[in-house]
Length: 80
Image (cartoon, rainbow, N blue to C red):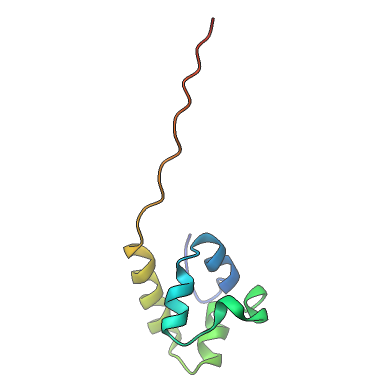
């Protein structure tokens, strides 16, 4: 997922549930706010008095540090 100023916060939280920790550490209660359904990352940053490019960079670094999701298991199918 590409994260930029136009990315909806809800899309970030759906793709990366652990991002809720990032927002909580920034004192942005995105996980419990109704506005995440339509607010962009830019709007959220501005509403909390943050510099948009800095918040995006910090979020991208946080997301890069998350463990990779496990690969789907391969199903063996035998043709008889």
